[in-house]
Amino acid sequence: MQLNEAMISIRDVNKYYGAFHVLKDIDLDVKRGEVVVVLGPSGSGKSTLCRTINRLEPINSGTISIEGQVLPEESGPLSELRSEVGMVFQQFNLFAHMTVLENVMFAPVQVRRQKRELARARALELLERVGVGAQKDKRPAQLSGGQQQRVAIARALAMDPKVMLFDEPTSSLDPEMIKEVLDVIVELTKAGMTMVVVTHEMGFAQTAADRIIFMAAGEIVEESTPQEFFSDCKTERAREFLSKVL
Amino acid sequence: MMSTELFDRPGPIARRRARLWTAAVAVAALAIAIWAVAKLASQHVLDGNNWIVLTHPDVLSALLTGLLATLKVAGVSVVLSLVLGLFIALGRMSKRRWLNVTSRIWIEALRGLPELLLIFFIYLGFPAVTGASISTFWALVAGLVLYESASMAEAFRAGFLALPKGQSEAATALGVRYIKTLRYILLPQVIRQILPNLVSEMVRVTKASSLGFVIGYVELLLTGEQAIEYLGGQYAVPIFAGVAVLYVVICLILSRVSTILSKRLA
Image 1 (cartoon, one colour):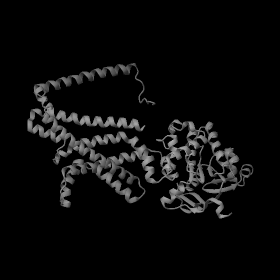
Image 2: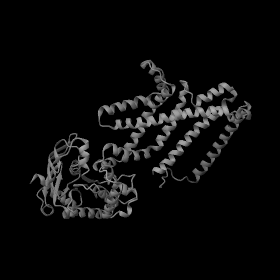
Image 3: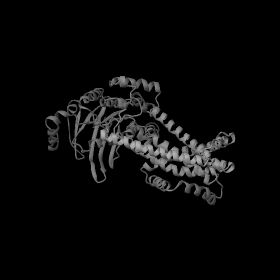
Image 4: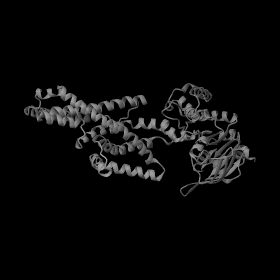
């Protein structure tokens, strides 16, 4: 693979929590516009892997680069790089004291120094796009989980990220709200966004992923297309996992 | 707003028992009050002409000057200890070991010392060590701030720890730097959360400023004391009562302000 083709490049990454080896020799490339879905049992390190990509979790060895640029060590350049990597969390993490609109405008105004009117117009457009435009003046606590998560996606998109990271975006949602969030994410895949999605939604993985990464015990155990993975996976570990979740 | 009931509703027996106790306590309280008033009256403490002194312009202006001096010390001390407390709290939560350890020592050492001792230390120690003199005002402020910064730091820290970790993580992931995360995301939520604590700390500083009288800083309490010395002992109760009312009023205003603030911040 050509170097300039890789949007995210993860090389020989190891991470420990004390003596516990969470990530073992992880190697992964994500191409521009590719949607990589990470599956695996809980405790397999998939969330941790997702969080190392914008260095919310530091790593012990190896390198992670985005568009060929290794994640900086210094907080200034690191913040700059993070501003180009959107992240959506399991717990939404909307700023509780701000309205929906303020949540989406905050980073463009404070980090990118955009003019308020400009940021506002863009925020309204994004909120409309994810279907929560009518909620713009409410506080996060007044919204359903599904609405909050869609606001969180709009907030990440407001920075025009090169990459979107989804860390179990539907895992804390009521069942009837999962679809409305997944629909928004699927919409993004169609728009050509480069994405890494950690999820337990097998239906989503099957239809939206370009590639499936299956992790267990801190290792990438299997890497294949959705068709291959769901119809005929190569490893016993993955077969066992699928028999439990499907 | 949902209200939580901490107790089961009382049944008929419990209600009867409660009524009985209420009546008994009320009778006892009334008896004590009557006895106290009678006692004070027999000592001529309640004589109207003693209390008239509170309307005397000289006494009034003296008390108001004292009040102003108290407010000055309290105000400066509160602002300084808020700022210092915030920095110490941040240091206490820092991952840098030297910062963390220094802040912890600061908090543990200063919380454990009586304010009076700190004020004496500074008032007598500062000139002894540096050779420069220190005014009673700044000695008092320094003593109060040293003690209070530790309490404020702990209040701030509790507020930061109570916030979900996701708030700062979300800001970090958006590329927001530490200072802005603190200023726009964390502090507004922390302050709202700990406002009742901060107000009771402010009330405490205001009251503790009366310790200034031991080093001769003329604040509200010392003003009252001087007035009594000048006018005579029969005016002690009325003047101290006046002083007490002023302290209570300051505290009432502070808690009123905090109620308004927390409603506006909500």
